[in-house]
Image 1 (tube, helix red, strand yellow):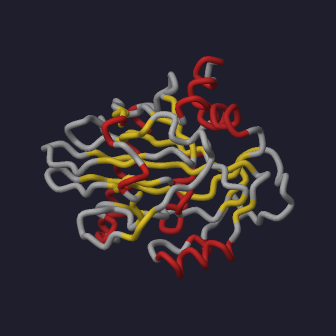
Image 2: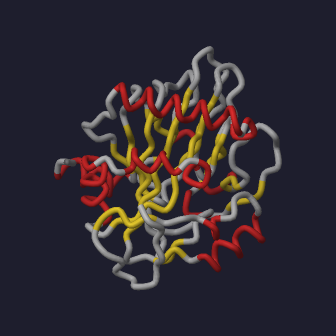
Length: 252
């Protein structure tokens, strides 16, 4: 469980690193499952936006009760998982992730999500760890983004240059098995991996069921900015009930 200080830090800074690790055996299982996925779909070498569309077995990792306990401390007891993704930066030429806010992409209203970011490998400044701007979530507003078409990025929306000061960025350095939890409005990105070591990261996207996963909005976003069509996502009730009464859930 998160301490009171860690919960306060999450709300103040927009992220926290809990005193928690996935076991080495779990990491090896994730690596093997991801390798099998890439053998079938090599186009996901750098970024797989929807793991559960391809292999529902990844859902087992989201059932970790300690992970769900911590998420519930941050967003409430009624929790849905609406996506899992994999940001894999291969050694030597892993792509960068532009500075962005997750909420720019996501069809959730009211906009509320806690992301758990799992370091499958050690995540360091040398191999392109996550970078955040502490406290940038506090105004609960989406900043201006623009579309990028360069081939060296994982995502196609980037914050306008005037919306952030990279000099304020903090590196989230994690050992394999550690996680960070971050808020939907937090400004973050990561550099390319030119090191000799891979930097694989898996994300769990949790939302409170008081919010609605809006499939019509998802389709509108896809038609407007491209990228990933979230209107077809399966959403899974992990704890509690659907407070909104408007979400539809797949069998977990």
